[in-house]
Length: 495
View (cartoon, rainbow, N blue to C red):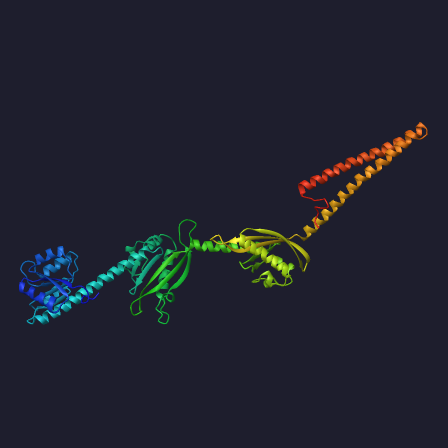
């Protein structure tokens, strides 16, 4: 802020000559402008004003009765008041100048005979001192704000100036290292006497320092991202057995207005959980890949447009081309009959649209001949619950289907045979009944009739035994129908 273009500079003018105060007001307020003058005639009165009001600058005469200019200056500086202070005197003794400057005066001004020259020079000194003090306050405020920001950062952060002193060491860095900030702030990078909380932290800090020294400004690439050095650090840092830690180190140069390096800032982020998750995910992927690629079932993944994202090696016997030819294509874009391709792509889109699994048996001509696959499709969801892809598992059920058909055919034949056997039993009993009737009417000896009737009875008992076996066979077929879903009726069998 420039005092000449902002609000007037408030000046406390301390001189035991009231006329000097009047002249100061005329020149600093009216003729030269930019100042607002308050006049007092001694140091004690000045202290009362200073305690009740804040001034931008103080101008005090060196020689005054009571509390003189230098005594007033010392009292203010002892109390921690750094208000810009200008000492005026009619004497030009060298020791007075040294005494005033050593006491903390910003400027020393010797009174002259020409008031215009005197107050013009005084105005310049006041503006210069106030501007410098305001700049110092603004800089201190900026530094304080920067310190608070750095201290608030979740990453362990430190900063080093051009003289290799540590100028920032935030709370997270204290927690990581176990070293309080007051132990290292504004000191050189010597950690030899520091006791670190965990083994390995000293190597971590040393690595930050090495990377920080390598940072530099790149005039051809002024962007901040081109000045940052990033590196991952792996070491034994922590408590107990679980002390294997991973950190991401980031360092960047601190540049002045001329883009010259005046230090560097470095931060450390604990990425152990992230790394462990990455390794766990990688291991999971490798396990999945090993499981899938050695699986006898055909495993495929499709994107939302039905294009192949992945196929495992089990598909090779079923396609007339290399598996890589499938990737990035839908079935409509491959060498399949259009009707089949449309049917398969439609099944994939149904799973994507509904978000539900689907299962179907598909039959097609392959290099192995005509095959039937049991095709199961499952939706895969993203973190928002939306379908992001479709996973499919196909199993060759050609042999199983043929076996089922043969089994059904054999059981149907048994059922037909049993039916014919029942008819045959009835067909045998009817002639036996006729024969028995004729024997009762025929003229023959009792011995001959008895012998024939015995033979007829044996035949009848044999038929009765066959009837029992037929009933038992029917019970067996009924059990198979109920518990094994075997269909034996002609209208239930597969075509």
